[in-house]
Image 1: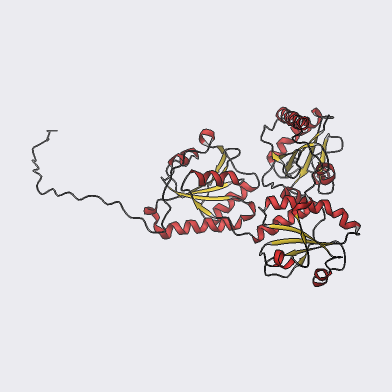
Image 2: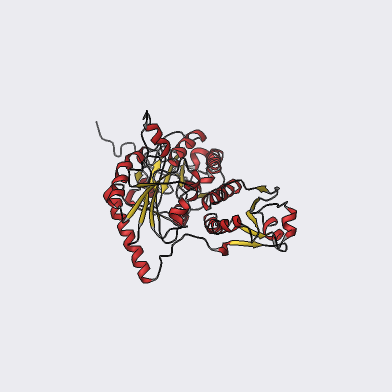
Length: 442
């Protein structure tokens, strides 16, 4: 039977003393447990190069929810022993692994199936019974896919087609003139270290292409053939990896040589060089749906009516949001705003309730959960709100109705101050007002 490996991690509570500190440094599981601990050194071998199905939970030692999961995770590992393997990743210690798979909250559980480069989020319950049921259901699906011939490939390697072959003739055009970020490997076909790097480079290229929407590229130069390029960049050993960014001198890549490290560095480069996300006004249902479904979180502000703030006041709120979008751009969140009263069903579904403007919420559309800003609508208040969300803290609630609400189509704000509605004037000079009509003695 195919073996499933469920990877998890949980944490000990703060203040655990004595010999427990040694265990904390190594993770929350000992050799006596059926949980397998994973790290950048063994993750590639155990997970990505295996034919097994993995359900992986990433945790942080300080995370209370991870702490609560520990006992159930151990029960899960024991119950599935011989059928499903259960493991753990300390994503606080091994940030490259967490970053590689977009882990931004704890605990995060991901399913590594036939395509190891595209894990799915586990959305089931957190009890041992629910996890076991989810693992067995996933196993049945994988077996059916393999029997039908529609899936089941293992290994997790990337396609070489996503590594761009660079030459003396195309290097300047593709790399230097592109204005985009490139990681370029200079190799020699006879080099043993280059051969070891090849599958890691290919897998990283596939993942980076997808996760950066083809904005960061991995290329390779056969330095024994294209000696002009190798000479230009002072290549004296193999493999040598250089980072190319627009308008800057190339820098040496100093990271690890496994795909997780390469992907993490590429994503950092992408975030550092990416423009801040666009701040969109909710003008119709498509804007809300696309933004909230394309990103892990969509941050939504409900700003006071234009008559209450004027253009200057509204722009000050939007400026705060844009600064926060820049600050948190590495999170790859969506950013939206709407005017108070323009989307009443949205406000109602988020418990904003027609008062307390400006208000802010963050929605996870996959889970239909949201959190409300309780502090001030300021750089400090919003930063504290988003920081807590990014590490899995803060209270959440279910979106009213369990789905995104109906959205009205509205005109975009024109950037100007609001105008009071025009009221028709009535001439009362010809109206006969009889003081006695309608009078009643009290």
